[in-house]
Image (tube, rainbow, N blue to C red; front, side, top):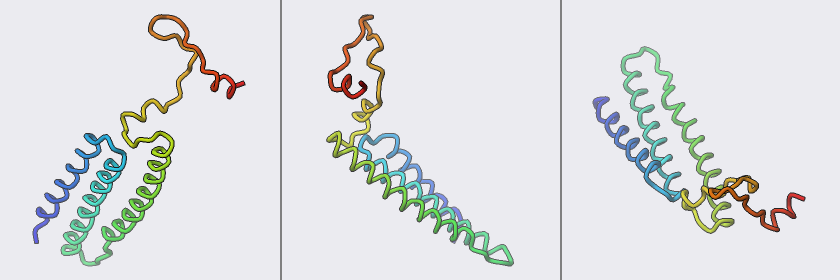
Length: 129
C-alpha cells in the first residue's frame, strides 16, 4: 500500500475535525472534533512508522508507541473536558460556547457607554465585603 492513501485520509479527517472545532457552537461537538483531529494524527503516525520500517534495518515501531501515548492523552482530555462541560452545563444550563462568554468576571465599577458607573448588585457587594 502506498503512503499517499493514509496520508490523504488523515488530511481529510484532520480538515473535518478542524472545521468542526471552528464552526460548532456546542462544546461536546467541539470535543468530538478534537478527537477526530487526534485520530488523524494517530493514522499518520502509524502510516509513517510502517513506511519507515520497510526502509530501515531495525524496526523500533516508535510511531506506534507514540500513537499509544496520543490515545492516552486523548482519553484524559475527553474525560476532563466532559467533566468541565457537564459542570458548566449544570451551573449555566447550556453547553453553547457563545453563551458562555459572559462567564468571565468583569469589573462592575467601570463606566458603561453612557459614562455613568454601573450599580453593583447587592449579592456581589455582600460577597466582596
